[in-house]
Image (cartoon, rainbow, N blue to C red; front, side, top):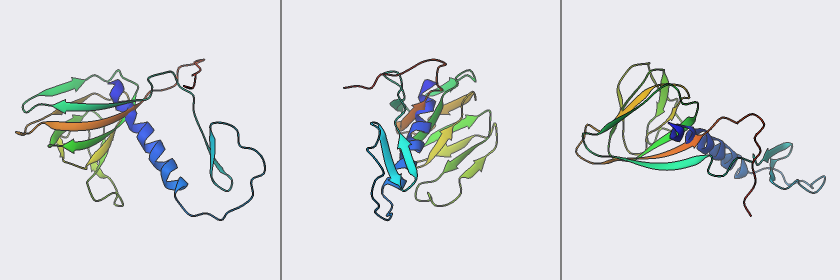
Length: 163
Protein backbone atom coordinates (compact mmCIF):
# COMPACT_ATOMS: atom_id res chain seq x y z
CA UNK A 1 0.00 0.00 0.00
CA UNK A 2 3.07 2.24 -0.11
CA UNK A 3 1.86 3.33 -3.53
CA UNK A 4 -0.99 5.24 -1.94
CA UNK A 5 1.35 7.87 -0.52
CA UNK A 6 2.28 9.12 -3.97
CA UNK A 7 -0.95 11.06 -3.93
CA UNK A 8 0.26 13.49 -1.32
CA UNK A 9 3.35 14.32 -3.33
CA UNK A 10 1.41 15.00 -6.51
CA UNK A 11 -1.03 17.21 -4.61
CA UNK A 12 1.85 19.17 -3.06
CA UNK A 13 3.64 19.52 -6.40
CA UNK A 14 0.39 20.58 -8.05
CA UNK A 15 -0.19 23.29 -5.46
CA UNK A 16 3.40 24.52 -5.80
CA UNK A 17 3.00 24.49 -9.58
CA UNK A 18 -0.18 26.57 -9.39
CA UNK A 19 1.53 29.17 -7.24
CA UNK A 20 4.64 29.12 -9.39
CA UNK A 21 2.63 29.98 -12.50
CA UNK A 22 0.44 32.74 -11.04
CA UNK A 23 1.29 36.32 -11.81
CA UNK A 24 2.79 38.23 -8.92
CA UNK A 25 4.35 41.66 -8.74
CA UNK A 26 8.06 41.59 -9.44
CA UNK A 27 10.17 42.62 -6.46
CA UNK A 28 13.85 42.67 -5.68
CA UNK A 29 15.15 39.74 -3.70
CA UNK A 30 16.40 40.44 -0.16
CA UNK A 31 19.27 38.00 -0.48
CA UNK A 32 20.57 34.91 -2.20
CA UNK A 33 18.05 32.08 -1.94
CA UNK A 34 19.00 28.99 0.00
CA UNK A 35 19.67 26.01 -2.34
CA UNK A 36 16.58 23.84 -2.63
CA UNK A 37 14.16 26.73 -2.10
CA UNK A 38 11.94 28.63 -4.47
CA UNK A 39 10.24 31.94 -3.77
CA UNK A 40 6.89 31.46 -5.48
CA UNK A 41 5.40 34.81 -4.41
CA UNK A 42 6.55 37.64 -2.15
CA UNK A 43 6.76 36.20 1.34
CA UNK A 44 5.96 32.65 0.16
CA UNK A 45 8.85 30.18 -0.12
CA UNK A 46 8.71 26.50 -1.03
CA UNK A 47 11.59 24.39 0.24
CA UNK A 48 12.78 21.03 -0.99
CA UNK A 49 12.32 18.25 1.54
CA UNK A 50 15.22 15.82 1.50
CA UNK A 51 13.98 12.25 1.50
CA UNK A 52 15.53 8.80 1.22
CA UNK A 53 16.23 7.61 -2.32
CA UNK A 54 13.19 6.04 -3.99
CA UNK A 55 10.65 7.98 -1.93
CA UNK A 56 8.13 9.31 -2.73
CA UNK A 57 7.26 6.80 -5.39
CA UNK A 58 5.19 6.96 -8.56
CA UNK A 59 3.67 3.76 -9.89
CA UNK A 60 1.54 2.78 -12.85
CA UNK A 61 -0.88 -0.02 -11.95
CA UNK A 62 -2.50 -2.24 -14.59
CA UNK A 63 -5.53 -4.22 -13.45
CA UNK A 64 -6.73 -6.88 -15.88
CA UNK A 65 -10.45 -7.46 -16.50
CA UNK A 66 -11.87 -9.51 -13.62
CA UNK A 67 -8.84 -8.91 -11.37
CA UNK A 68 -8.86 -7.18 -7.98
CA UNK A 69 -6.47 -6.41 -5.14
CA UNK A 70 -7.03 -5.63 -1.46
CA UNK A 71 -4.79 -3.62 0.84
CA UNK A 72 -4.95 -3.77 4.67
CA UNK A 73 -5.29 -0.78 6.99
CA UNK A 74 -1.67 -1.08 8.17
CA UNK A 75 -0.01 1.15 5.55
CA UNK A 76 0.66 4.71 6.79
CA UNK A 77 1.27 6.09 3.28
CA UNK A 78 -1.01 8.50 1.40
CA UNK A 79 -1.60 8.37 -2.37
CA UNK A 80 -3.10 10.36 -5.19
CA UNK A 81 -4.71 7.93 -7.66
CA UNK A 82 -5.56 9.01 -11.22
CA UNK A 83 -7.41 6.74 -13.65
CA UNK A 84 -5.61 6.71 -17.01
CA UNK A 85 -7.63 3.98 -18.75
CA UNK A 86 -10.67 1.80 -18.11
CA UNK A 87 -13.18 1.97 -15.27
CA UNK A 88 -12.00 1.19 -11.75
CA UNK A 89 -14.29 -0.28 -9.11
CA UNK A 90 -13.17 0.56 -5.57
CA UNK A 91 -14.22 0.66 -1.93
CA UNK A 92 -12.51 2.02 1.18
CA UNK A 93 -13.09 1.34 4.88
CA UNK A 94 -13.10 5.10 5.41
CA UNK A 95 -14.79 8.02 3.65
CA UNK A 96 -13.06 9.60 0.66
CA UNK A 97 -13.77 12.21 -1.98
CA UNK A 98 -13.46 11.65 -5.72
CA UNK A 99 -13.01 14.38 -8.29
CA UNK A 100 -14.54 13.59 -11.65
CA UNK A 101 -12.77 14.34 -14.94
CA UNK A 102 -13.47 17.86 -16.10
CA UNK A 103 -14.81 18.90 -12.68
CA UNK A 104 -11.57 19.94 -10.97
CA UNK A 105 -13.15 23.25 -9.94
CA UNK A 106 -16.15 21.49 -8.33
CA UNK A 107 -16.13 20.01 -4.82
CA UNK A 108 -15.07 16.38 -4.61
CA UNK A 109 -17.93 13.87 -4.67
CA UNK A 110 -18.23 12.35 -1.18
CA UNK A 111 -18.08 8.56 -0.92
CA UNK A 112 -19.11 7.02 2.42
CA UNK A 113 -16.99 4.33 4.10
CA UNK A 114 -17.70 0.87 2.71
CA UNK A 115 -19.46 2.20 -0.39
CA UNK A 116 -18.39 0.74 -3.72
CA UNK A 117 -17.83 3.36 -6.43
CA UNK A 118 -16.43 3.57 -9.94
CA UNK A 119 -13.80 5.92 -11.33
CA UNK A 120 -13.24 6.48 -15.05
CA UNK A 121 -10.55 8.11 -17.20
CA UNK A 122 -9.46 11.42 -15.69
CA UNK A 123 -11.15 10.85 -12.31
CA UNK A 124 -8.90 11.07 -9.27
CA UNK A 125 -8.99 10.59 -5.52
CA UNK A 126 -6.70 10.54 -2.51
CA UNK A 127 -6.35 7.13 -0.88
CA UNK A 128 -6.00 7.89 2.84
CA UNK A 129 -3.37 6.41 5.11
CA UNK A 130 -4.16 3.45 7.35
CA UNK A 131 -7.42 2.67 5.54
CA UNK A 132 -8.19 -0.75 4.08
CA UNK A 133 -9.28 -0.70 0.45
CA UNK A 134 -10.13 -2.88 -2.50
CA UNK A 135 -9.49 -2.02 -6.14
CA UNK A 136 -10.94 -4.04 -8.99
CA UNK A 137 -11.81 -4.18 -12.66
CA UNK A 138 -15.33 -5.37 -13.47
CA UNK A 139 -14.99 -4.18 -17.08
CA UNK A 140 -13.63 -5.72 -20.27
CA UNK A 141 -10.66 -3.36 -20.74
CA UNK A 142 -7.52 -3.13 -18.59
CA UNK A 143 -7.66 -0.42 -15.93
CA UNK A 144 -4.53 1.73 -15.72
CA UNK A 145 -3.88 3.90 -12.66
CA UNK A 146 -1.15 6.47 -12.07
CA UNK A 147 -0.40 6.47 -8.34
CA UNK A 148 1.80 8.97 -6.51
CA UNK A 149 2.64 7.80 -2.97
CA UNK A 150 3.96 9.87 -0.08
CA UNK A 151 5.42 8.12 2.95
CA UNK A 152 5.41 9.62 6.45
CA UNK A 153 8.81 10.84 7.66
CA UNK A 154 10.95 8.45 9.62
CA UNK A 155 12.10 9.94 12.93
CA UNK A 156 15.71 11.08 12.70
CA UNK A 157 16.08 10.16 9.02
CA UNK A 158 17.81 12.53 6.65
CA UNK A 159 17.89 12.35 2.91
CA UNK A 160 20.69 12.90 0.49
CA UNK A 161 19.95 14.90 -2.65
CA UNK A 162 21.04 13.30 -5.90
CA UNK A 163 23.80 14.96 -7.88
